[in-house]
Length: 531
Ligand SMILES: *[C@@H]1O[C@H](CO)[C@@H](O)[C@H](O)[C@H]1NC(C)=O
Ligand SMILES: *[C@@H]1O[C@H](CO)[C@@H](O)[C@H](O)[C@H]1NC(C)=O
Ligand SMILES: *[C@@H]1O[C@H](CO)[C@@H](O)[C@H](O)[C@H]1NC(C)=O
Image 1: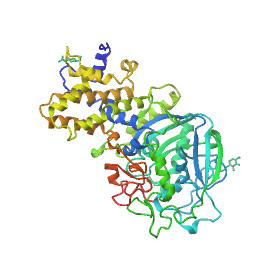
Image 2: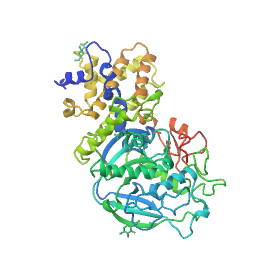
Image 3: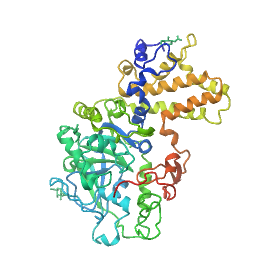
Image 4: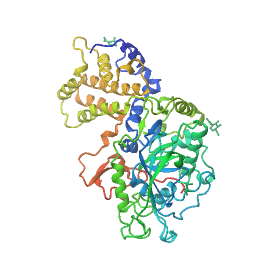
């Protein structure tokens, strides 16, 4: 490969100067280059349960399309099709959690507008159930049942995907991008304050209002993630074809019902009783939830089936703005310390993106590109810093092999070599006119290649390893937290609100799929809201 004429342009864009051994300068001021590692991970984590669970605070917004015909699920106490605004799950097991008689817990929720009739149980019920355990026996009408609705998208659904674990009702920052950025702290008053479950319907109604008023009817709903991906769809009647409604198994039956049903007694299964150490109020236990856990884990690597198409060429991320998103050296981004007006440029960009782009237009699959980078380097980097790498000679030999395709042995130059090594991942047309994802991917690939080439020049092994270890901390790839070699009876467990422990976050491990979340260990999510 001969160097391309645009190389200089790219180098100057990267702020590489002849005298500078490391590509520092421009990255100090240009947020895209400074945050290339974060933007790269945003792309890589999108629509994946694994990465979005670990990097659970999203600050990015994508245009997403769910193709017509895609089947979606809704659980409720109602046996007639929904017409208004409600929640949809991509996996039936997720919806099944809500397919139960309306409980009496909490204040009644009937503040919904007249055009949006109260639909009975909705996601508020999940919040209550997860927080308080299922409603007590005496509140349930024996003739009441749960229903699982199956719908098909009647057209290509145009959605705003809010990344991270944006449906997790936590105080750890999972709701910042909605409550603070998108909704400008305008959500609710009094009863719905805080990230508690009560705010959920307000969020849905507010998003649908924005879809109409600010986004010119170009958005049909919002796509978010909790223990499974979900859609808040503004008009079921307009956008869905009902396929079937079935009555679900009664929860009253069977002594092995969902764990913690008898809140006072010893509960079987994970996260049973309220307030147990396995979770604040515990997760759903029992057979249903173990099926749910399997269903969730099956989407760790992606929603699958091309059920969601993302426009990666035109997305909005707070990381590309000049904002301090990591206050007090927080490892995940927060927005709650920022003055609201500072977020106006991001809000403006969201509206502009929605008004000028259509998620169906062709875009490069930058997620596939991030996969290519990670599958190329993840294992080798962690091997290089491991104890199995025993001598500098060995490390040097391995890195030399790794970078060989990019070294012109007639003219050694680390900058040029790193540039060639980084450019291998960037489609040619994006090298001349780099877009946000192209710049982020390039920035990450460049820093990997450059660090390795620097490491080769180190005299001693510890120093070389230290360079690579620092790079790995910066890259923060969730691939390095994946379990290896789980049995077919196990799943790799990571905290997914409201389940999981601090230990599960730090070192996810293979655990029995029937009881994936154990009750010991400090709950990762801690307290979460006034409710
Ligand atoms: C290495 O390449 C860069 C980019 O072309 C150039 O600016 C720099 O002068 C070269 N360094 C050396 C030592 O030749
Ligand atoms: C939705 O509309 C249909 C047709 O008008 C009606 O039969 C059904 O009861 C409505 N669903 C709800 C939940 O009100
Ligand atoms: C956000 O809310 C503040 C305070 O209510 C208001 O002054 C500001 O105009 C709002 N910004 C936008 C973009 O709506």
